[in-house]
Length: 66
Image (cartoon, rainbow, N blue to C red; front, side, top):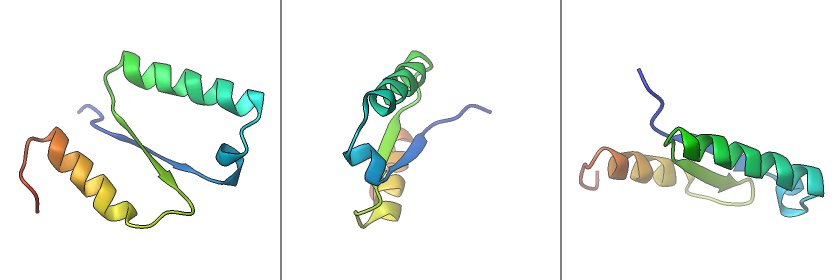
């Protein structure tokens, strides 16, 4: 089994990034990129999260729209 997608919820702290938060996010992004794992970032202020995740999974699996 291999992970096919990482999902991260970015809350208030992400939108008011400190230097430390930016460093951690860049390190996380680099690790995921190194292992070829796509990342979907969702905002806690957003909507349609389920649709965004399903759409990205369908795209990665080369499946048409549900």
